[in-house]
Length: 381
Image (cartoon, rainbow, N blue to C red):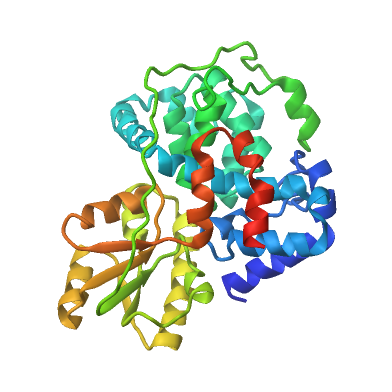
């Protein structure tokens, strides 16, 4: 079974059997072998093996909005985070600069944390689960981040980096901004504290002797990040090369107009390996890349797969390419790489209507965005 078929089966299985109970059960982490209370779709949505619209429409076809409101909101959280960071890309830039500065601070406490040898039993269990499966329940992610920051007193940026490079659903916006939220930076002064009673209530395993810092104050930063205008490219292609990538892997299934002259795949895995992404993540992305490659080979008789600037320059020269076009890349390592190429080559981003419509609603907090969800649904359904 290919990955898209696997994703659609999981979507249907969840909507048919567990969606109606999602609001009641979603906060419980019953363990890695008992995930029916969550959709387990995040790794597919991150790479748009299936997209947000498919998920929302599938859920909406089963139940009225008020029954599944919480699930729909969770799908839109990812969209909100992406839009929020697109409006404030400096947050990502500063985060990357901080990681460079913190490279020399990976001390024994950091090593104990990433190797699951801390004095906090549940935290060690989550480290093992993350490395083994590439997944953690959302509630566990919050507990993990809080313990990392406030009990182990480690820089939040290093924790966010550890997550991003081990999670199969790792998304630069959702990950970075969620860690900032736990730290008390995203909503200034409002942090999240993991507590023993909460962990014991919502986890399958009882951790009786946890010693957590349950009185910590939120972190502080002096910079206020201002918004920058969103800009979406207008494309009038001439002898164009369309390069699909695995962060929007079903784009051609949704917009297969065959209006471009050449088709190919851009494989970011070499870049991500250098950045330290885990083998689990690289392997998952490789499987998606393979499916995209088979699609363009079958539909467009193309065998173009590119991994770096030299590959791209060669294809441009051999085919006299005028315009290189890619599905829109939001903030993250992949966009950073392509942004450097844009200084040498004309590359356009093709944004989906969904993103262009939703991102501007991310200009404030999520509650403001949430008020717009009925309007968004009316537009997209």
